[in-house]
Length: 569
Image 1 (tube, helix red, strand yellow):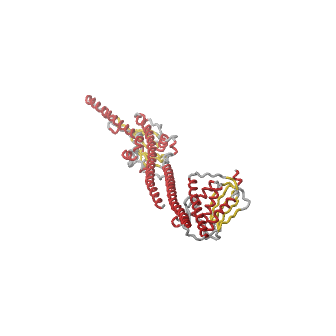
Image 2 (cartoon, one colour):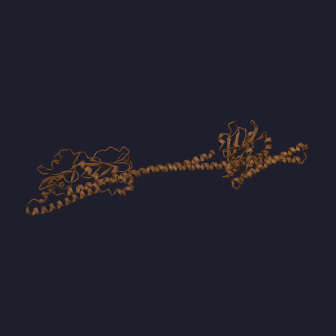
């Protein structure tokens, strides 16, 4: 049995190791997917903000030269439009004027390390989700989401459009310069295109710069007739952030999970581990601004709980399966061992009476017994051993029929006292030969019970025979065959005054072939079928069979039969 436990343990270990590796890999994949989902949500949200900024920038870049001199405060977050004339005169609303005047006196801010138009993951999710714009890491780490990320093109599209506008304006200026140069060569006058666009920098798109942490200035330079004008718009960063949050989130369910802060680009604190944090730097000309997004864990993205639950179910199923396998094999092995012991015991039990019968028979046949008393004694021995042999064979055949469920039981309602008296008369010589006596203890006035005579007789014979084996040396030296009323049941009991049954073996004494002693060192005779037949035949009659150690010593086997009232029902 120990080797069986070792083998089952090795099987369990062989299954648990790959299952553990599988769960570990599954948890890793779930965490990567979880981070990737939040990363994609963050990138799409930042892309919506970039599109909103493009919508804001488009009209400002398309605004004609005369449009800025008129001022104006329409637009999301706009404090006012301004124009700085070549002589230094500032034309702007009163709220925006001091900011425009302070613009060129403010020191240029340090260039952040994060490139414009990119997203960085902060905290633990940074290890599992590459930032937007890092295409090599994106292909290696999140290849499944490359197609979705490729849709986030607002910042790239705005950069390409600004570059294309600058190239188109520069090409147009060069064409005009060449045309004016030809006219000047013929007329001797200065080229008008050269006066209108003396510096290529005048043709560049708008640039952005922070005046202070709360205000952003978008401006462009226009050169005409050799003089330069500065035109642009002053934007309130806080109001711009509110507008961007409204454009990106609005009434979306995501608003309940996302927290967005728009402000100057700076090194932000990492996530505390309870949420997913990302920092985005906007593309030009808003590169001085950034947005930090904190995402609470999104519903439906925490698949680790399912992995843990399925892992627990798998482990429980594995434990139950291995336990059932061990129990089944252990029962089969134990049963096979007990069958083997049974064969050895039956062989011994058959050989012993046959040897005695043969020996006494040969002595009587050969006239070696001169005394008549001796011959009578040998005849009694032959008869007793024959009866013992018959009981053994009957037990084996009865158990075989019970095991095959081929033992019919014809139940009748009647008194049990005659059956007990018949069993006592049959077994008394057997007990006397063992130095014991059989005592009947039958309560008067017992009601009739439901039973089969032959089955009950065989039950009593086996119960008494079992008591005889273990009652030797007990005080008093007797076996009690009793019948009593207990509630609605009539109990027939056989008790001895022997040592009783160890508590650890009480639950197994009615199992077929089971014997409390080791088969090769047993001190008592038997095959291990006696009590198994008691239980089998008793239950076939609808009785309850119990075995218990008595407080005053000894062991009792009780068969609770249905009394007359129960039998009638």
